[in-house]
Image (cartoon, rainbow, N blue to C red; front, side):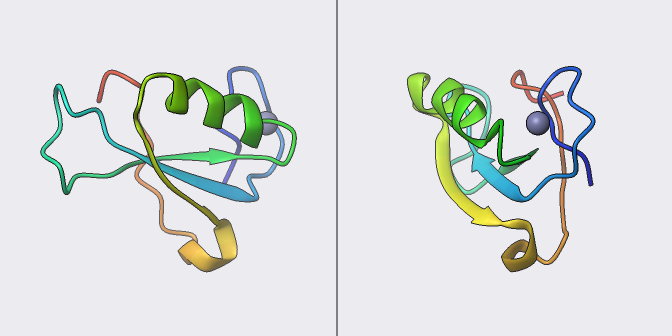
Length: 73
Ligand SMILES: [Zn+2]
């Protein structure tokens, strides 16, 4: 699993779970993968928009990942 940051080729260590309340039902979770370097910038991006719900390690997430862009595609 690779980091979701644009242009980053590093292996992901973190899973950021987020939800855009404008387009997603409350229980829906989108997931982004992040390497150590991008965990903060991706997290800040989601936090600034009020989207971030949970952050956990890839190991804790069991490698399960949906992916998808910020607009839900
Ligand atoms: Zn990265």
